[in-house]
Length: 128
DNA sequence: ATTCTGACA
DNA sequence: TGTCAGCA
Image (cartoon, rainbow, N blue to C red):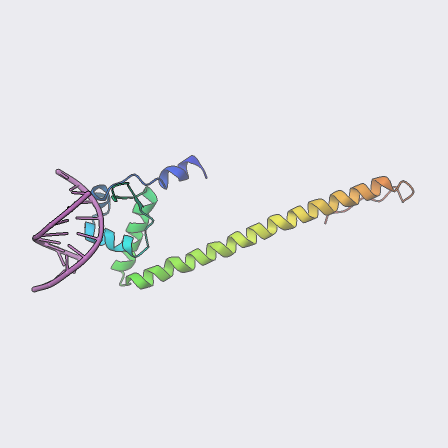
C-alpha cells in the first residue's frame, strides 16, 4: 500500500471533527457507523476515530440516503461492490498463477532442448 | 470539554 | 432523529 493510501486510511479524526467535515449530527454518524458502513477505529477509552476514507464513505452514504435509500439498501450497494472486488482479485491471482506456470514450462523446455544435443538444433521454444 | 451508550417522546 | 441522563 502506498504512503498516500495509508494516510487516507489512518483513523485519527474524533467525532467532533467528523461532524464539522460532514455537517451531520453525532447521532447520524454513529447510526451509519453502527450499521457497519464505516470502518471506524476505537481508542483505548472507546472513542471513535475516523480516517479520511471514512469521511468520504460517510458523505457517500449521506448522498444515497438523501436520494431516498434506506440503510439496508445502502448496505447492499457496498456488499455487491465487495463481491465484485473479490472476483476481480481472484481473476488477477489466477492470471499470476498462469504466468508462473508458463514460466516454469518454458524453463523445462529450454533445459530439455539444451541437454538433448542430438535433437534438431534449430528447435526454438515458441511462446506459450 | 468531549464522546459514549441506552432509552423514550 | 432529537435529546436527555449518567459515565468515563
